[in-house]
Length: 476
Image (cartoon, rainbow, N blue to C red):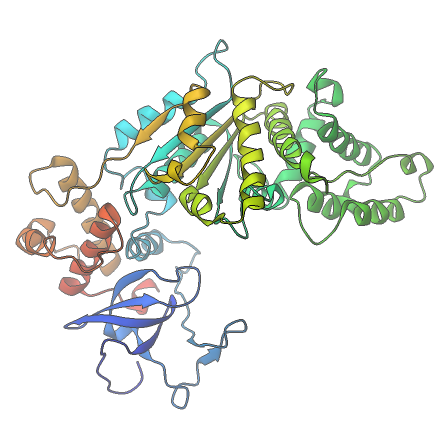
């Protein structure tokens, strides 16, 4: 901390999360809203000792953000001596809860209604060979009521069950169904699976399928022509021991990177393999063509082909989660963009309804949205779910703290234990804070955060005010 200072609302400060503005001060606990970084616009509480007022003349650690030119105070994020120690994992969890978020590794323990959610999620996975392997489902809920949390839980369970998982958050601008390339890029950038290399995961799915003896005939006689051409290109390079020299180029094609076009990729691959004559007779295709009319078909073809390739590589299929759809639906004000988006959604509906020439594939898509989203769109998500016999789950609003609810009591006890371990104050018992908990839950510091997210943030705020966040030295 820089000298002696008094935190006041409106003051700009720096924290380990980035730059923010003070919203409220209660004793030594300061509530700030971040103004930059990954968690921009998020609000959380932090002890004043962990903050620095932004004063460029007095603080040598202040740098300027290269994009915004805003002043940002840099603090090292402490780690355990041996990487992610148990203490660090718990502190990481508490820091995430300050934003109303639950880390992946604790999602099963810190989810209200976990058993019911787990039951619904498993009901959306194909359970036997008589079921159509693909499915289109919806998660409905108000702002801050846990839609993103449920999507994370879907991916968590899917990963454990042996599916490939990937996610996208659409915004109607940079990432939108009106531009399928942007969707594919986001999905491939988040692709994960058991034992799947984090380096070029999309390409490694193809490689694993090829290692297991699969080729273009494995796809059968269907409409996946463009996808099969890409598969054959990778197999050709692999069989001729040239994949290592062109893997980065092919991976850029697979993830729809805008760093290279298909034409440029073909030229570079030919240059790398010019000494082998029979490698010069192939054509390099991009995942999504330049033709606007063909893009919806390209999009579906790629997801279907990748789902089948996942099974060839030993996975059960592909799970896709799409969050923030209400933003997409309400942002497409231009008619031409709406038409492009609706063209993709119509083909998605047709595929999951069994009305295309594409083969059935273990592809499961989940879309999260607020209840009123269908009023924005001519092609409603709910209508697609109903027509394709998918499933919906309507998340009930969080009704507030109930001290007589065993599940809520178990949740606050678990969070208290994590916080106590982080602060090394295990002598504190959570039952002793019940009076404070009951009174503080009647306040509403973050009206715009929504139900359960609001509860998580307020609870951490209460613990901060009682125990104070751990010091950096406690990680060492």
